[in-house]
Image 1 (cartoon, rainbow, N blue to C red):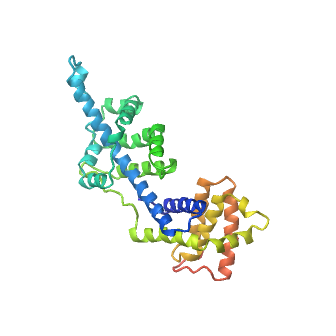
Image 2: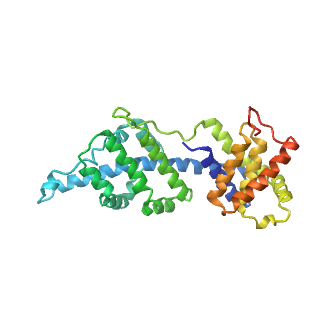
Image 3: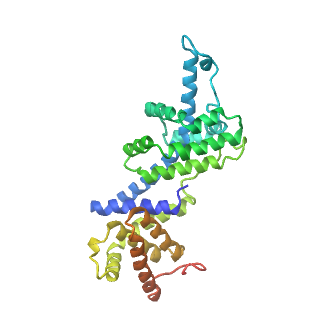
Length: 316
């Protein structure tokens, strides 16, 4: 599922696009924001489908080899360890997962050449060779191979990174990495031969709550933009706000909005989350700068009673 940090990043990206475009249509920006979140979930489904497609391609190639005019012993008796991988079988036979592929229109059909190339690269790896020739067989071995496949092959594939980056403006390197981690977690949770492919992860932990969080953070950051700009200017009098990194300012505006508008989110959580977001997208010095400004603003907000948190310990 998409955690709150990922959702904050998606809101930040949407806000950046909104302010850069000088648009005044909140509904249009909001629609683009939720589309970008849905497209990220699609990536998870693509990576869940990937090993199924590769195994089916491998089996098709084995059938072709058997039908050659002069097949070798290896052609007639292929190693089916990968093709018969128990985890892949479960994923293939899970009706809920297959239904999700169909409803989200997830398919690798247009990328057959890329799949053939990836399968060829996979076969050449020590990971694959050790797997198919190992005397150790069974469920645990199959699951470990698939987990290592995501960690060592998929996450390192420049071809896949470029493929998705070119396919959609909504997918960047971080989106791809997170989607791979979701697929890996899915496989990790498949515990036995009777797991039936595991449960498909939901897009949100709490659908209604998370959707409201995304919508309100996006809208209220825009609505409070002028006021939040003045607050930041007051704390950066020796700085030209226009010369401060755009994403640093945006992180602070989102944090201010969250501090003052979201009564159920602890202050510490908000501060820590935006420091972490700044590490991903801003300069190395941004963490200290943003933390310093927000600490001063929190002190002012508390004194002016602008922060209203509901629940024990949320003001700390």
